[in-house]
Length: 198
Image (cartoon, rainbow, N blue to C red):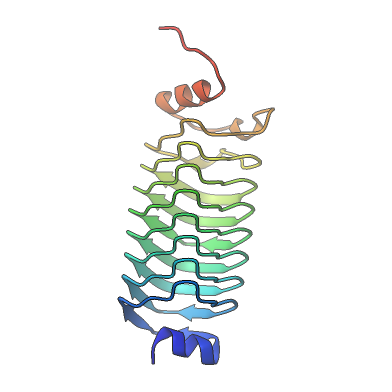
């Protein structure tokens, strides 16, 4: 049976291996996915509201404008995926990784992020506001134009990531305790409208 057949009938899918299918705009609200793998599957504009996903790999999949609001993910990997406009509002993400993926205009607002790693991916103009996090690293990513209002950068690893045009609260409290390299510090200063004189 296909993932769609299993999910539609049982709202639960386990040990699914699927490749090259299209589920654009489908409603998978409340579905449980465990120990599965998806390759080159399109979930564009699909709904995963309140979904529970664990021990699952998505490779070269399209999640453009997909909605994962209030979902729970544990040991999930997105590799070379398209996550443009994807929404992870108020989701619980643990041991999740996003690698070599495109995630422009995505939203992680009010998410709880624990031991997650984002690397070599593009997140320009995305929102990370109100996040609670621990052991969270974003390495070698493009974070230009991102919003971090209400999200402390303390203990958040941003190694080799671009942070130009980022937005913070007026009192800049998010920056307290942040560990930034020189280039990142200069980018943030410029985003505040400060002219640096050589």
